[in-house]
Image 1: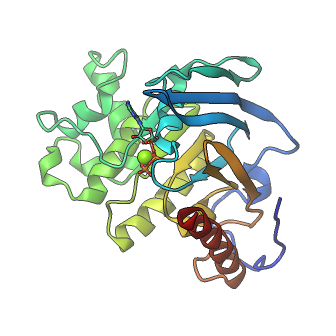
Image 2: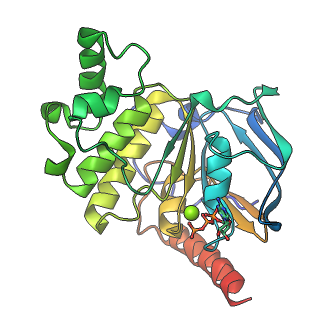
Length: 268
Ligand SMILES: Nc1ncnc2c1ncn2[C@@H]1O[C@H](COP(=O)(O)OP(=O)(O)OP(=O)(O)O)[C@@H](O)[C@H]1O
Ligand SMILES: [Mg+2]
């Protein structure tokens, strides 16, 4: 496990500092034990062991095709593992409090933002209540003025913010994100990363973020794990205060180390 003490002069601008937003001690909330999955007799996941604390932010890295999305789909209940088990707070895991966010926003073009965001709410037919909920959640992603707009009028970043709002409205315990910002331009991506960090701090859910962007992983995550040959081969605590600065030299060193590791895997 690697931890760092430098770069601690950063001024936190969130209301909560790092010590307050992370739970103390080793408080395992989500436990993945020996998760295995094959497709057409080809093993993809060969025994994923991972323990995650409540409100932890975990980034998952690994080369293309190593099974990152498969793992997220299993967590989202969209795929069943062949073997292994998942426990949540010591009990059998139910995926219904997990929301999955994909690379593409997957909005329904024939519904306005109000209906897109409230689509999965059980009492969405209570128009007044669901409109209030949609307004409040769109406020978090700064789209409250667009509640009656159609998805086709929105930019890529705005659409992804609606997708985030749609995930947040059902107060998930776990937000599983599959390269959610990879299709966005650099500035929009930076804004989305900042927004995600803010809503994560404010709302107390756990994040599992799959990304190819090592810098993004280090900027946002409490911990970075690397999947290689179907198992987790690296599990690195990113023990830095928030908000982190992209150009902090120690973060850059860590980014380079992780990139080297990934490039070694790719070359092998
Ligand atoms: N439903 C499926 N049927 C058959 N093979 C599948 C299925 N889903 C995934 N696979 C295979 O499992 C492997 C892992 O796929 P997965 O999408 O999880 O990789 P990934 O790590 O997310 O890759 P990327 O970084 O490119 O998104 C790939 O070889 C893929 O072809
Ligand atoms: Mg994938």
